[in-house]
Length: 147
Image (cartoon, rainbow, N blue to C red; front, side, top):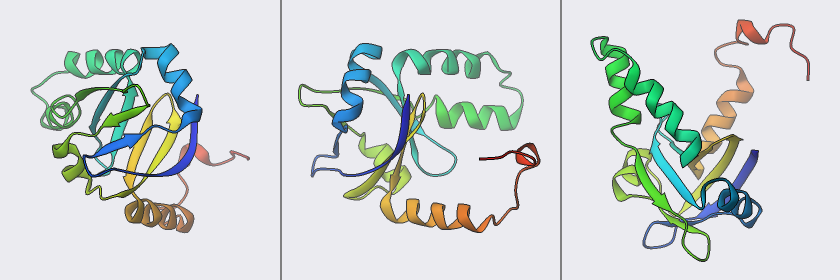
């Protein structure tokens, strides 16, 4: 559904112009209703609302007595914000989430299948350098995987 990285800019009000290639899909999928939330990697996640709802339900159904689960619930559900694309395809990224992810003017919108990640450009470049270095080795589930 959504793939590839697209450099974009946030305007002075913190609005992001969704690339034209995604707008029609987002309009048909969710009428432009999106959820923006924090990610443990210090980027933001942007979900079409219908994709987010089962994730939120699953997170909320988990036990809040497990400290790790509770932390993840706080991070993802506690920071989730409803946003809506305006008539020209922009969304307002909430100031608290921009601060969380350290977003400045230059950002990268990265398609990840059913969702997007939104990264500060410099952090994204560091993330890619790290990925190319296979710093942590190849995950076991990818052994034998061929491209």
